[in-house]
Length: 262
Image (cartoon, rainbow, N blue to C red; front, side, top):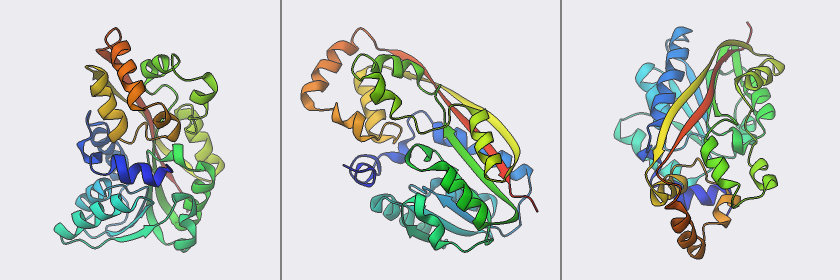
């Protein structure tokens, strides 16, 4: 399955569960950064990798007069987002597109705020940052949130029993740490307004608790991971899991707000 199929079939119906409130807490931190910069009263907002629209609706709550735009590849996620916006009587322009190609749908210097949250593992981040720079007005803001290489360190150690080092490394398209993400943004022409590390402790009670999170949250929605999740392997993992779980781990992310110079 490609990434759109994975989200359509496995993630969309469960995405808003946010099992450990990772998205919810990260959004609060991102929103605090944005509010501190006091963007336009009625900003034009573009969210890349919109998902089910929950983050975009949170921005609507903060900026009721905003013009909302979202880019999303999963048709089922789009359907959920459309329903949410309709229930709240809000308009949203949704672009069904890979975030890597969003630039062809958005004119230069038309957006006040672009957000790219937890999708860097699926995109060419330098290309997307360059396009975001082009689409933003002078003084416009780019909000980026991404997991880093320290995210789920305990799970990665466990994964080494089943995956080769090359397969694990192949999944790391995300920045190594906050410093690397800020460096990428500066290379794209942005000035970093604020950068922070977000951390959230998690605890997996048993293998099935982990499995539910992995399959339905989007964090491990990857063809390499899914290849190992056959019914035959699941029985083995449950048995191995008796000696491993409960397991405590830590989710870590970099959250950065950058500005296009005036």
